[in-house]
Length: 301
Image (cartoon, rainbow, N blue to C red; front, side, top):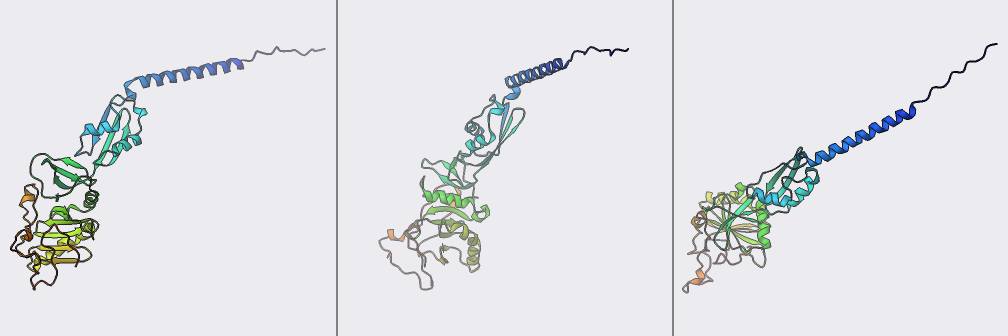
């Protein structure tokens, strides 16, 4: 009679396998933590260089200070969008773009507001005026002739800020004939301005009308010149009107503008005691002329 042979069961090794896997996992995690610590302690985790490009008027140092980041700061601790917001608060800066390149490089790209005019400060310094109304000191020398000169404006004048914004939206080619812009407010037009052209015309318009009217001005002057009209007063308000200068009133010389100096007003007949301020316009002129002094208000005909 046969008996069943009983084979003794072998001990299971599953607990040891699980223990080894856990040990390997903790070792791997330990080395990862060590590597992270070593990385953040190394120079690879720091900002090594900051590039600033696109700035013409602002110093790179001023932009770097506004960004509030410096070489040696933690690379991953700074946000590109936060840097952009800080730099965008600077005057003269229209837009700012920040990009980060590992390891340790930050590129700041600036777009400045364009220059739209020039002016002379109270202490006689020559300045460039930007589209946001901010001013930049110019190096010594004459003004370039490619932009108007602003005279008679005060700092903080909201009309000046509106004018600068309007000029920033106008192509430079449309302003090539404008040598000077002065405020000339009236009761009817608080934002009225006077423009002097290099072609010897005085133009009255408003800041609100300027972007629309400036496009028509070269053609309007060209049509007058075709009719052998070399100078005079142009009112570009609700309607466009030309009138000759009053007797004894000469067109404003552009020599002062070329030298970068403030220009004086045209001679005022009212200063001559022998002149009659109510003197009528010659009968050959069917349209009303502006008052004798360019500084007085000119109402639309």
